[in-house]
Amino acid sequence: MTIKIKDMEVKIDFFFILLVLFCLSAGLWNDVFAAIAALGFHELGHIAAAEALGLKVEKIDILPLGGRIKILNLDEASPEAEMLTVLAGPMMNFAVSIFLLLLFNQSEIVSKLGKNFIDYQLMIGFFNMLPALPLDGGRVFVLWLRQHMNYISAVRVAAGLSKAFALAMFLVSVVGLFVGRLFINFAIAGFFLLSYAFKEQKDAPIFFIKNIARKKEMLFKKGFLPMETLAAVGNTPVKRLLYEFMPNKYYIVYMLDSSMKIKNCLTETEIFDKIIREGLDRKLEDLI
Image 1 (cartoon, rainbow, N blue to C red):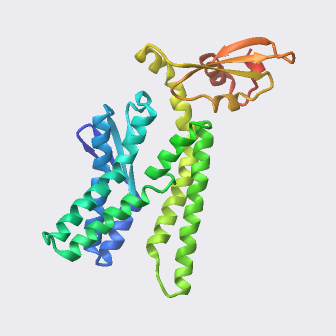
Image 2: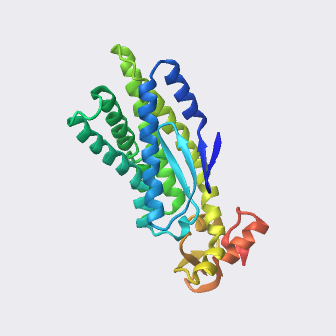
Image 3: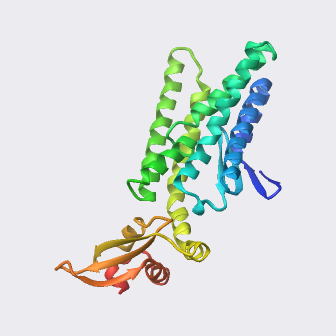
């Protein structure tokens, strides 16, 4: 389900709606209200941080145990600004929980209801700090990994860790059955992480290629881009070279012969234009 709020698109995930309906049918009205409030504050933190840093939120995906925002001009943001925007969601949950705790101690709110609200604020905040996709902690983890490897590899590592967390949660829920405890929340969280880890891994190459294709627009908008060079031999698959390209840098690839002398060079624009016409399964020497 998708709704429009001003210029922002809000997409509510099917699993989120299903989870809400299941909880309401079980009579967990207070839990649903507290969880939705926690998610609302979480997304508000992202939006407030993005606007403060000059970024425009284009879309929000409401997921079962968190949310995901799409920023229109993310390619103009520094890694630090992107990281602050990502972390603002959990930080908002922690700030709200501290505020509610102060009210709770002052007996300004009903104790049971107040405790419920605090629990969900902390649960959403801490859960989203896990280094697993599509959670905020997973986004920060990918940003850190990108300092050491290409984007596709970073997403694959983070998705692998997400699957490990999911399997651990499934294991806890299974062990709970043997000890007479029903850890349904662990099973739901595990299913959520597992399904979205596969989706993130599948979508990563498409997202990456879209960012690479926008470099011409970025160059003429900013007037400049940092440049990097790569040295490669002729039989190197072009796909491997593309995965080394970073969205905020422009690349020139030098092809070397067996004597390590420069035989030819191609800009990434030339490479990209040629693979569109000739296909991605080519070697560098085929593009000369």
